[in-house]
Image (cartoon, rainbow, N blue to C red):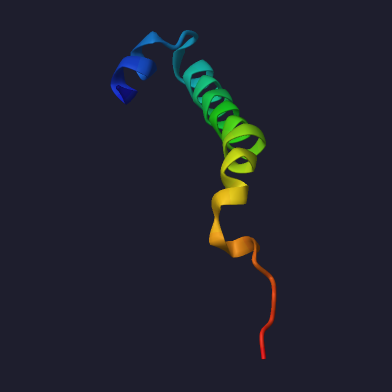
Length: 52
Protein backbone atom coordinates (compact mmCIF):
# COMPACT_ATOMS: atom_id res chain seq x y z
CA UNK A 1 0.00 0.00 0.00
CA UNK A 2 2.72 2.49 0.95
CA UNK A 3 4.72 1.63 -2.15
CA UNK A 4 1.67 2.28 -4.32
CA UNK A 5 1.13 5.69 -2.69
CA UNK A 6 4.84 6.56 -3.06
CA UNK A 7 4.88 5.61 -6.75
CA UNK A 8 1.77 7.66 -7.53
CA UNK A 9 2.80 10.89 -5.82
CA UNK A 10 4.16 13.43 -8.35
CA UNK A 11 7.14 15.84 -8.51
CA UNK A 12 10.15 13.69 -7.63
CA UNK A 13 11.58 13.15 -4.17
CA UNK A 14 10.84 16.64 -2.72
CA UNK A 15 7.24 16.53 -3.93
CA UNK A 16 6.79 12.99 -2.67
CA UNK A 17 8.10 13.92 0.77
CA UNK A 18 5.81 16.95 0.89
CA UNK A 19 2.88 14.85 -0.32
CA UNK A 20 3.52 12.21 2.34
CA UNK A 21 3.65 14.92 5.02
CA UNK A 22 0.33 16.30 3.79
CA UNK A 23 -1.24 12.82 3.82
CA UNK A 24 0.05 12.11 7.33
CA UNK A 25 -1.15 15.50 8.60
CA UNK A 26 -4.57 14.92 7.03
CA UNK A 27 -4.90 11.50 8.64
CA UNK A 28 -3.83 12.93 12.02
CA UNK A 29 -6.35 15.78 11.70
CA UNK A 30 -9.16 13.35 10.87
CA UNK A 31 -8.31 11.26 13.92
CA UNK A 32 -7.87 14.29 16.20
CA UNK A 33 -11.06 16.14 15.23
CA UNK A 34 -13.48 13.32 14.33
CA UNK A 35 -12.47 9.86 15.53
CA UNK A 36 -11.14 10.66 19.00
CA UNK A 37 -14.07 12.93 20.00
CA UNK A 38 -16.49 10.25 18.78
CA UNK A 39 -14.99 7.54 20.99
CA UNK A 40 -14.19 9.78 23.97
CA UNK A 41 -17.46 9.15 25.87
CA UNK A 42 -16.85 5.40 25.70
CA UNK A 43 -13.37 5.46 27.23
CA UNK A 44 -12.90 4.79 30.95
CA UNK A 45 -10.41 7.64 31.40
CA UNK A 46 -13.13 10.29 31.85
CA UNK A 47 -14.16 9.16 35.32
CA UNK A 48 -12.25 11.62 37.44
CA UNK A 49 -14.08 10.83 40.70
CA UNK A 50 -12.18 10.09 43.86
CA UNK A 51 -13.76 7.65 46.28
CA UNK A 52 -12.94 7.21 49.94
